[in-house]
Image 1 (cartoon, rainbow, N blue to C red):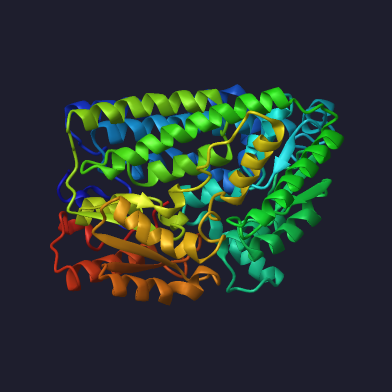
Image 2: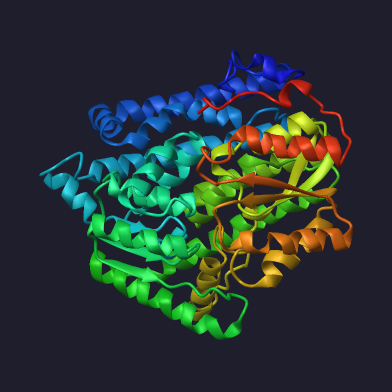
Length: 512
């Protein structure tokens, strides 16, 4: 690890003055993959230059994507060996998918191409879905592009640039929405109020995930996009057998809705193929978790959980995604077999509750500063059940269960046992030394049970560090505030000395 990493940062930005030195081999690999990323971005920009310039000028959130190379560097800080290679391969595959989706979105966007028959024809084929509904069910309509409606204007920009959500959250509050709601639905509503969603699609599948706030913001978005819309009502108590029939009926109804509005016939054989690929993707993820249960966990941190979310939502059932998984797993398996461990780890931590979007490289900081490796994260564990593809009904049952255990929902919904009891179980499975509990201050659901976590940890004699955050709003809890919570815990409870003292306190409020 580079000592005094903060000395290489530009004042107040957290942005490096020059590339991180990781040793000759890893530095060369990292630089090569950085160049590959730039190649992908330049290829995309030159593919439809006028259209892409229009998009950047039309949508405020598009400026965020100009900083993607810096974002990728931040969430790879301090990584070495197979962990670095896996991270870069995952991120560059993500860049491939996002740029190809941008081509579809902007080519069909009637905001960019008013009166264009070509754009209108493409738009009539596009299925829009809520970003928390996995695309797997739409693999039965291979001729219809599927766009996760909020993924590109909302979710990804909130990770890339901490300041992007602020404008839209302020617009929601100026519109009259309460200021104490979760920043996620507030951000989404703000994008709708600003008319900053692309004007695309023949229909929209919405949902009741992950929480009541998202249900309310759907109403605001519906007024703006004006598309035929059907909500998929996902059962909350997903462990109960008596809700599964209802969940399957919701999927069937959604399929009928899609057939009606796309004019396409649903291909159940294509869906079966996609489900089998998704099962293989899940098995690849299970392997990664097994490696992280060892005493030399090779694949941890933001690049692991971010890729898992993207894979679960956007590229589930896609062969190229599976190929990437297998390539990464081969590297991880080799490093574990050789007993190589190119990072300094003092503590194994489990991170519970939803992580902070505007500090995606929090994992990197706790590792580089204090030697805390996030070997298990709640946000990484969702949609894990294998889908039975032997018949149509069982396949739909599996997809319905996948939806019920989607991102930010597998633990926050379902009952006490999946949110609370699972924490103690995973703590033991991964042989952890401490718990880092994210206190998302605007979440009315999980915030109500913080005391239960604290009492449970105290009863079991487990060390717990509570870190305040506000998901997508850096104006209430800053990155520096989050670091201060960890610093106080490590210095007063653990009586520990930092691996890199320069990282204990620094100003990065102006950082992307």
